[in-house]
Image (tube, rainbow over all chains, first blue to last red; front, top):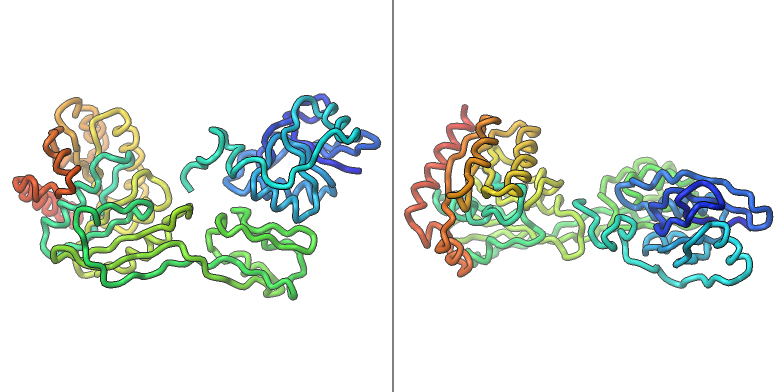
Amino acid sequence: MKIAITSSGPTLDSQIDPRFGRAQYLLIVDTDSLDVEAIENPNVAAGGGAGIQSAQMVAGKGAKAILTGNCGPNAFRTLSAADIEVYTNVSGAVRDAVEAFTRGALQPISGPSVAGHFGLGQGGGEAGSP
Amino acid sequence: MKIAVASGKGGTGKTTVALALALSLPGAQLVDADAEEPNCHLFLSPTIHETVPVHMMVPDIDLDTCTFCGKCAEFCRFNALAVIKEKVLVFPELCHGCGGCAYVCSEKAVGKTDRRLGEVEIGEARGHRFIQGRLKPGEPSAVRIVREEIARLDQDAPAVIDSPPGTACAVQETVAAADFCLLVTEPTPFGLHDLRMAMDLAADLDLPAAVIINRSGQRDSLIEDECNARGIPVILNIPFDRRIAEAYSRGEILTDAFPEYAGELRRVWDTVGREVRA
């Protein structure tokens, strides 16, 4: 099974990036073989809708779940439409998170974990001038 | 002649100047283009004759004809559309209403639906035509409201347009509609910083500009040096005077509380008129 993890680097030993839409990397990991496809996220500096774009990318890769720190409302809606389970509040090394997921130690969420624009810093809310 | 009153920094006295300037010239119209938080009406208690709703067209997908090819989502630079399997998600608050999604759809599956952004109110106050915009709370962009306000101007009469603060899209829409940009600033580093951005904006739009220093008296050279360097005249100084702030806080217009400013503001009209014709 393929799952996606937001990461600050391209390998299993990298730390999880707590942002979803604007994560540095999206790692697509095969939970059986632990094969990794690292995607440098082009949406880091997107003007808006970064979560929606990243969610479409994850869906396009055929991932069934996403492990991340936080997930906003637009990203959550897009991931849900793609039937991708969302696991938030995941931190530490990617390898440990994948292992915890495989073990069944993580619980998927049923709604967004933060308000929009979280990944823009300042705790969300201010996206600057439209 | 249309004068946009802008500033960059908020709270420098745009509304103070715009109100006094409009009332000092018989027949001048006043437009409150700060649709996020219009406040000219607090000073004028205008009579509103007409309320014009402002809408934006957002996509409405016909799922029977859609082939889920994803061209619309790929086209949208604001990510207002997502195509996932046999679903199309629309995020209306991200849509800028350009219609590009309908244009690129080869199946003609993208229809349009109206989304209300706010309204423009048109009325009269003290014999002056008055127009103000109201953006619905939560809406991110006032550009379309400003556009509608400008469209409602009487083209044959002079107008003062009270701009929103900042230099973002809604301000650009306001300033671009004018013949002259009147910049109200205060002699502080923050006032200067944002004044520079507003000066750049006027220059980018090829608009003549002049500066009014509000709360003038100390450190005016901060602003004057910049104006000299750019060849932009300072045409009025409004002193840092507690009585002016008190009158404003009571909802009094500058020229009502201090009639001696009426002549000064008439001179602003004359100066601007000469600059525009030059």
